[in-house]
Length: 243
Image (tube, rainbow, N blue to C red; front, top):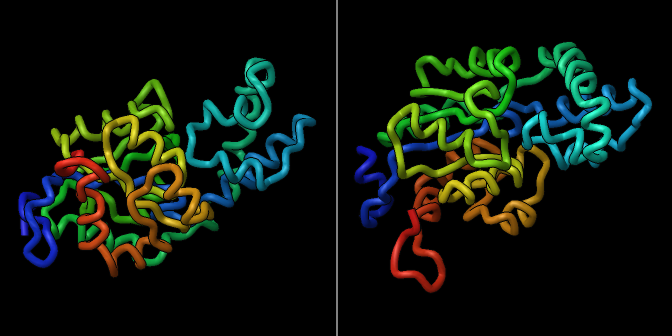
C-alpha cells in the first residue's frame, strides 16, 4: 500500500504523504520527568512552582516555559539559568525514561503504509539522541528535527514546517500528546491525532482540535487506519478534506 492509497475499506485516497510525530510523551515516556526537572530547577532559584502547573506546559519549547510559568520579567532575569538547571536535572533522569508501548511498531507500520515518517521534536539535540537511539530511528524514520532546526518553538508551527521541508512533504498528519502539538499543527494547516500518554486528557486534546485521541502508540496502532481516515475526513460543513 502506498501513500496515495492509504485508505481503509476501499475508501478514497487519503492524500497523506507524511506522518509527523512528537517524541516526548508521544513515543517516549518522559513528560513527567521533564516536569520534575523543571520543578527542581525553579525550586533551586527560589521560585517554586507546583509540578501540576509545569506539567501543563511540557510540550511547548523550553524557551517559552519560564515566561508561561511565571512572567516575562522572570524569563529575562532567570531564564538562561533555569534552562541550564533543568538540563542538568533532566540529564540525571533521562536513563529512567522508556519507550511507550508500541512506539517502534507504530513507526514501522506508518512506513509500511508508504508514509514518510518524521520525528518533529523540539528537544535539545543531546536529549533527542537518547530517544532516537531507543527508537532505532535511523531505520524507522526518514528524518527528524530538534530545537536547533527552527528559530521558533512549539506552539509556533515553524518546527513542523521545517520537518516537512526535510522530506519534501506537504500533506501530513501530526501525532502528538500535548495541546501545544495540536496548536502548532493547526497553525501549520495540519490535523492532529492525539495521545493521552503525556497525561493530557482526551477532552483537552479534542478541545484543542485533535481529530481523534488514543491511549498510547500501541492503542493508536490497533486503530491506525480509522485514525488516519479521521485525519482526512471532511470538516463539518465542508465539501472535502482540508489537507
